[in-house]
Amino acid sequence: MSIEDLESIAQAMVAPGKGIIAIDESTNTIKKRFEAVGIENNEENRRAYRELLLTAPGLNEHISGAILYDETIRQKTKDGVPFTQVMKKNGIIPGIKVDKGPVPLAGFPGDVVTEGLDGLRDRLAEYVKLGAQFAKWRAVINISDDNPSSTAIEANCHALARYAALCQEAGLVPMVEPEVIMDGDHSIEVSYEVHEAVLRSLFNALYEQNVMLEGTILKVSMVIPGKDCDEQAEVEEVADATVRVLKSTVPASLPGIVFLSGGQTDEQSTAHLNAMNRIGPHPWPLSFSYGRAMQQAALKLWSKDMKGNYVEAQKTVAARAKENGMAALGQWNG
Ligand code: 13P
Image (cartoon, rainbow, N blue to C red):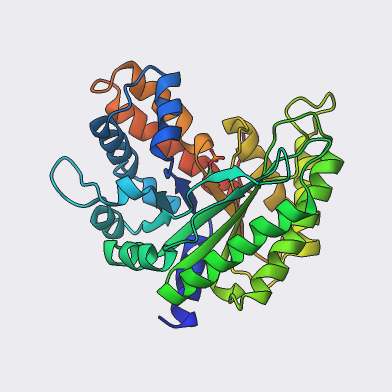
């Protein structure tokens, strides 16, 4: 696959008014989401729920791609059609989460590093065969009085860059995701500083590993105060700080930037994205790749009556896609 091919996939992922739905929760994470609403975490419930989301009528009007989990990319609709086939037919690009999650970083209490590089070349080749066109790797950066260490930032960015280079070799667009976690009582200024350090380190590492930015997508957290910070920020403040840090660290050759929701409410995640796009134009499209902020309303509805609320739950996820799609254009009106 040529760089032009990777570039056109990356551009399609951030087409105007479109974003990504992240449904790549590991079996452990979806267990937490299911348990919170009283759904049993078994394979059939996971399959049925992902089918509900991926086949929601009208979803493709504002969704360009979906990130799947290893189990999900192998699953089929109840009529026996592979999910990836349904997605491609609907113009939704299949993506795959390929990291193996964070583990404690030895010697640096409170810091974590994402694993999953061993054997990654072979796993990527299999995912390509299964129909994936982009991949995601999430690095987790914790904030506390002692975290993150510069060692943790570098270790995570090095792994992200190694993963990204392997993706491009395999013909997949890497979605590189450093997530600065919202837990803690840190201020928005601290969040800004950590984002700045992480993004500088990330783009340096991508350069060192010969990653072509034109065929790469950045997925990142917003610059936001910690959940327990006494001083929460206005929507415009978050938008200003996030755009400012991106402009000072992210090269203009990147085809697009998408955000994770990271524990924000549905409304916050949409309002923040909208406010950022209102103060544009920016060097890159700014869109969404939300998990919880795309799904939580639909999941809650479905959990109350799986059969009876099926259609309403599909309408709910499609409505969230539309709201976020409008926010990606700066045209959401609350
Ligand atoms: P949230 O939007 O729920 O943070 O999930 C997005 C994601 O893919 C995190 O890796």
